[in-house]
Length: 304
Image 1: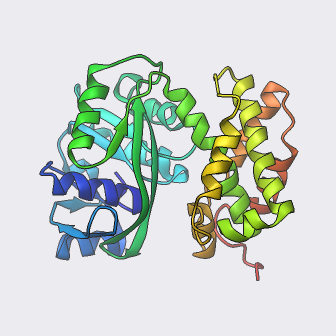
Image 2 (image 1 turned 30 degrees about the horizontal axis):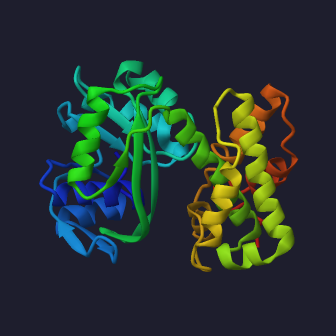
């Protein structure tokens, strides 16, 4: 459900492994998949092409075993309504959105018992209609929203592993969701605000301090919400940032450059809102949010 950089990449790997995949897409991307199949370009996984059914109308399909949800957070509620025909008694819905609330939002549309929780670490994007470019990472974490082992989680994890996807099933998926939100406070919000990729950002002391500070605030909010985050989680994330190629950048910076909508509400906006509820100050995240809010629905008409 959503066959862009994330859904197209993982759906392509599943189709290549022989799974029965249907891509739900729209526009020129949909027509290209219908006409030529989906191509994935990846030095890590190897270039490949697959042919699979594609549609923009989930209502034409019968209930499925798994709905892998790859839409952006701002399209998630609409996607939940549209995917209802896909969800039967045994269907599992796996959201892989940024942020921490995708499971709850989809549960309101299709039922709490149908939706598990997932976290994706992957760098991929639509290079051209019908073509996915994969540049780094290939890892999914999934689990039951309330924690603990689960036969359905293990079944899905094994299927993903069979497609060449690194897959982990942590006991407490909430920690994994918050760990990614913490890093996205920087790689999402701060990178988009400064318009800087990793190299110039980490080499500028002030920008680096903003990056680390935004992550520290997010970690403090997560702990206030009762999430048992490791004390050194921000240092771990920063060490990861130091090891990235200088040109690496987050998807929100890419979206900003392309004039697309931004996921700022689900990232820095979430940190601010929960911080207010928990009584945790988040001035750096507020500065990032304020600087990007006018771009949330795309570039303002007066933007230069």
